[in-house]
Length: 621
Image (tube, rainbow, N blue to C red; front, side, top):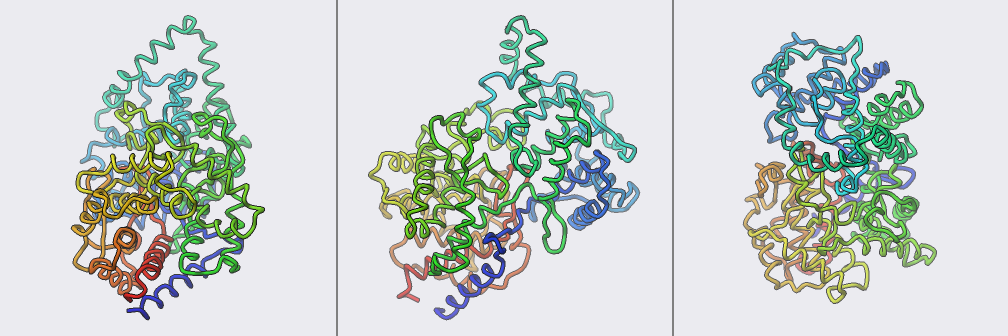
């Protein structure tokens, strides 16, 4: 077994080194399904941009992803998704490579009709349809544009703000645009006389009526206030455009910004719009030979995790691969103030973002991941000490009042907002403390600094984790799938911060992991966990879930156990596994909206688990 383990570590290291780009990065794709591909086709033809090669390649990928029953799914073991199927159906018709009479399109149409038609799609799909003339805007949009002038606007998460701001603008103007190529989807509107959004927006109106009354009382509700709000919304978007032309480096916010600017009178060929489209085209990547438009890029995230995982194998920090990666990471530390500073004033920027084009939206996870990677460089070169210190201060300052850490902002956890009828609910509208962010932050401080459970802010983080453990012993992870991921982050964080392994919270987590280990020695979890709000097993084990579970047990157990050994054996015997479990999503975007497949995870997390096993139990091997 020792030889097999050494061989597998060497194999994984070789794969990762071979995939490193010349600039020191790892640019593995950030794969989020076909929805962005659909939106891109619709956007290009709406703007009358004839990029035939791109449109054909995207349409080809969409067609290849269709299930035999005519639907498109969010993940392998899921059922056909109505909004995704509508998006694919619409995009393929718009592309010109499919007609309504094609057998597979007839199957898709029948599924859409059987499930309620366009009126039962998600809010964001309705927005797309309304913007492109396929769906009627509601008579009354429940969030008036003046809403962005109120302090309540900044109670929402940054993700909600950057997506909803352009939507508020387009809804105010009831803007829509059709072209000569626009397909006709009217046969999917099953109740043509119904104001289709009235039912969905009823809850919004009741919630926002208080805000509306407050606006009405402002100086008699003058027209100037509305003009100011529209101007503020426009400036909010323009001031947050990244160097590549995208709005906050997200596909969705950039897509909606383009329509909002056209609603404000910008022409289709205005430089801001053409730069935005060019920026979205830069998100193009190849996955198994097929073209995909990424939601954003994951260059910093991949580079930080892989650099760290390679160093955990014993690779020297002075090696060329690590030196190049870490210099790149240090060049990506952010120096600009973004929306994070609204709730965290008087702190210097110092974090890292997820994407290579992200300059104003740092997050806690990428910052601790980058610091793990560059620590060796900082220790050996005092020139970089200032960068390290700025990042440490920034992370500490971002701790929420409840003791936990969120992803992007501080204290964005107004629970009443989670009840609004938006897909993803609180996961989109809020940015609360989470077990994965809190656990990984504690793990960083415990293993890579001199800070431990005796420091007040660490003690508060530990307290938050223990108080937010699930009854079965697991923790829910917001950004991974799901309970295995959260439990891995929480337990490794608690142990690193100095919590005794005999602590009841750690022992409960260990027992939970043992109860869900599969017969083959591995672990697997379905994306349905996220939808069901409880752990839901996957039919098969995956290497990534197994690596997370193993790393948890390795941290929590003093000695090698049969369960750990069986998990290691699973990783070794599946070293060349290449089936649907390999490409199964391991990350969350929006619950019930889109999920993420990280190709890099199949290499780096098994590598970490094997390396940590080797370090701790080498004598047992």
